[in-house]
Image 1 (cartoon, rainbow, N blue to C red):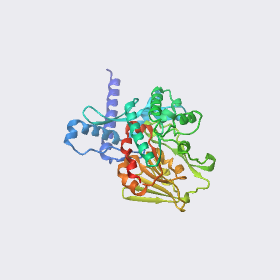
Image 2 (image 1 turned 90 degrees about the vertical axis):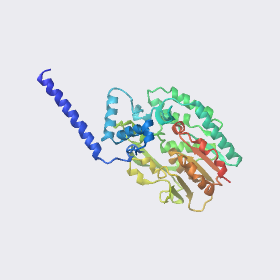
Image 3 (image 1 turned 180 degrees about the horizontal axis):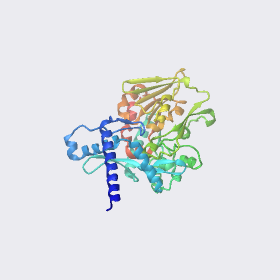
Image 4 (image 1 turned 45 degrees about the horizontal axis):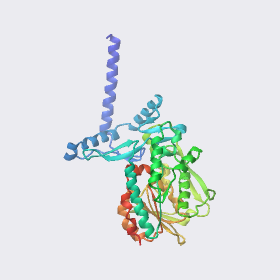
Length: 410
């Protein structure tokens, strides 16, 4: 080894050590974050000591997650990795696919499972269990039967995943997606299931903006088409698209898929509010409950514009996902009542439904704590709608918890 090579090796080692120790010092000095606005999720904080978790390996897993979540300049490194993957002609980073026209989609579903030691795990996978879907269909069938016996009208919506709707945008094989959608249609066919898969896919392929490119939700236009299909299921007439004024409220929306994939060069999405031309916001009142907190907003009724200045712009619909939300008219007009048990896909759907129904909206994850509220305030509801997206059904099935809803109705 000559002197020049030796000096180069010493310089390389010195730069590496400086970077390593600089990052270590920054890691130790910077305060830990509990929430990432960029990724719209809670971050792993330093775990409290637990002897049982230490010996079964859970504690070390939490430590690893803590270092990964709190690492300095984490978002910059994720972005750099995505650029490298793209330069290598790869169209996937962190389980997010990069498709034509900047379309992003999570490759599979985040499956939650228990390993052989009984520890809870999660992983993004391309498989599903038909027998589990059949079990969930059985719970919905029991719910439908009990509600119809009680004289209630029931419908189920399971919004498809972006990777299913926008499959034509990716070179990724669509076989898994097609098999999943076929099984869902078959297993839930007799469950008053509003099947949106084919319609959404056809509209996407025709160039309609029905799903966001950087987020996993449908757009407001996509939510409108879902509303039309739901009204048809109930035998009711939706308002035509021409009766709404469309307001673009943002042209800088970056959603959860963008944050997960790290493709920093992708253009942002646009976001719209739809305003009915005669049923104006001053006719409605929305009340949001989160634990002991109660917030009422009437000037916008369906929208909380404070979120439009934040990363999580989708939460402008109904002020995000809350334990309970009620929407009612303020002018004394009597309308049928609907219980809407849902996930976040229904946030942009609810403003359309609120034009026809007084809504009692329950977050699916909070249903068990909301049953007393339903019994007290919505026992006379004529309509029940469940909106739970397909990815959530695969990752965290909840239909077992709601199958006894009819017991809380008059």
